[in-house]
Amino acid sequence: MDTRAAARREVFEVELLLDQDWRSQAICAKTDPDLWFSPGAVEHRQAKRICRECPVRSQCLSYAIEAPVDHGVWGGLTERERRHQRRLNRQVAS
Ligand code: SF4
Image 1: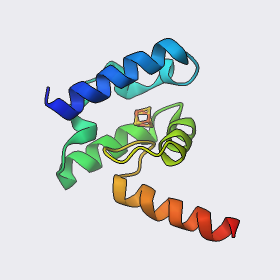
Image 2 (image 1 turned 90 degrees about the horizontal axis):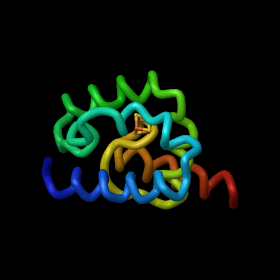
Image 3 (image 1 turned 180 degrees about the horizontal axis):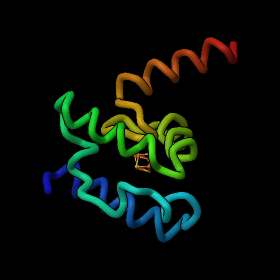
Image 4 (image 1 turned 180 degrees about the vertical axis):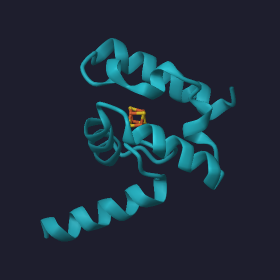
């Protein structure tokens, strides 16, 4: 497990202790987290495919956009896609 994945796992476990709601149902919490932090397009597609099946995708994406979380695939979106979504949200809000 690389440093980013280890850090994500650590954050996830701490947050799990604080918030058992949606994170306890996250598919990625039960699998190898490296997939969500790999830089390659193939890995992104695999992670996004799993996210599409995740029962807490919308909660995860809202969290990642609002936090904001700057790395990895969250809620089925890459970092770049979440930045784009944040820009769209700001435009709609203004
Ligand atoms: S949507 Fe994806 S990143 Fe979010 S909790 Fe589910 S599997 Fe994990």
